[in-house]
Length: 234
Image (cartoon, rainbow, N blue to C red):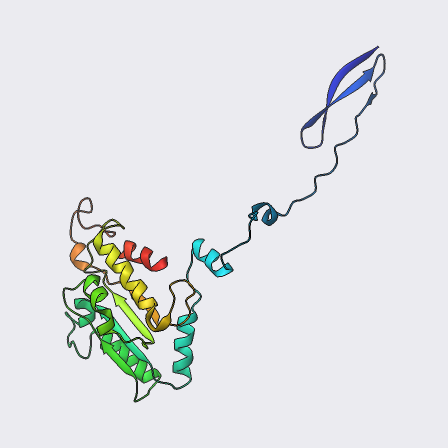
């Protein structure tokens, strides 16, 4: 006479066994074969040839750029060669509010720093700031404001772009188009990052939006910085 039962084994797996009548022993069935580890990358690999480069895949995963354009700019400066730098923006870039628009605004101070650190008589450092302007003006007139052989372009519009506008709205589309146009200057690419000028997106705190009760007004996220930063990231 035999009795059926189960035996807990290992990490909680229960196996059936047979217990002989009148006895205390049992016969365990053979253990299952060991689990062979599987490479997770092999499981995730698509069954078709990969068409994206490793850089493009990394870009989709949260991309901060290769820094290739900035390295190229740094190489020119460190090599003692002249550069062409342009600042695009509204009244902040123009210099409104500074004690001296031509000397103490951010753009001339930035150019002074470049000249002091990497002096060269042939540097072309141009401020294209236009008061009370948004990106749409520069999107339409970029080819007349920035030459194709520019080495550096600084873009500042967070104070003048409408806050919390949908990404599909005209202002956001215009800003995205401006970024794409700047990136493709001089034969550059918005995908590979090769060629074209280094691009710096600069945000300025919109102090005029900081006043309020903190419920409907005076919100720290009321400016367009988040949306413009998102466009720059992608």
